[in-house]
Image (cartoon, rainbow, N blue to C red; front, side):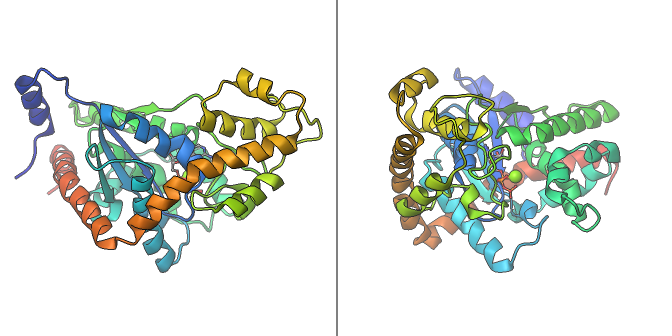
Length: 347
Ligand code: ATP
Ligand code: MG
């Protein structure tokens, strides 16, 4: 039976004095190694706020095929990402998890919304320009239309808040514009207008080797990022090779992006203020600071890794959580899609 989300909300509000929780939605592409940027810019923030909201976290495998990826890597990364979500502290008590391609409404609505998207809007998207690089004519049209699929992910669930890193701000603005355009075209509040939830610190963790670029899964240089599953020795090597400068002053300075990025990571891991950190390393060199940062990283990631290896070795449990999540969200997605098709006159 179709679920009327608005009716549900009204009934819940009428039956309880507790305020109805706002909905969050976010996702990560299973395109390879989940890194510190994904953790500090996204997952860790999701964990911190999970009990305040009604959360949906997706593993966006349809987004992952916008760039070439082998079937084995896609399949394995999808399960690994699910295990990492849980290992990082996301709790099925507060969050629904599912694999995007298991809810076909995402793909179907994406086609519809592409037909309502002016080409000029997509032409402005900076992520496409960065990812297409020198070859805009040979990358897939899926990469070009990526923002439409992302908009549908968000809009299908009447999402209020989208917790993401800074790189996704433009895509959330696009989603808002698309939703407003559709609502006003049909004179109905079909879509809830979402807002981005972006932290001030950690919203853009930079590459360790080229600190003017963001840290990314798709960067070809493995030394550019710390992966959540890197062991202590690998972390030590990567931090030792991380780009700094010749000033040898351990201080936050936007004109020195390498050391500032490492200090920002340290700030996020320790919870100290920039002033406290600068005082801690006053008169000390980059070597001492990098050793302290390495220790913090290992101490943060080792417990996550322990939980990850337990979870990934219990595939039936993981598959059951993902199936339950998909079964729970599918009726919401189906109802939104039904309303969209109805107002357009499809079917
Ligand atoms: P890809 O290179 O394949 O696009 P990615 O590293 O950009 O991978 P995504 O799956 O695109 O990762 O993004 C998942 C989430 O992580 C998003 O919320 C995004 O904003 C956030 N994120 C990605 N990179 C960073 C970063 N360097 N700093 C902070 N947040 C980030
Ligand atoms: Mg990305």
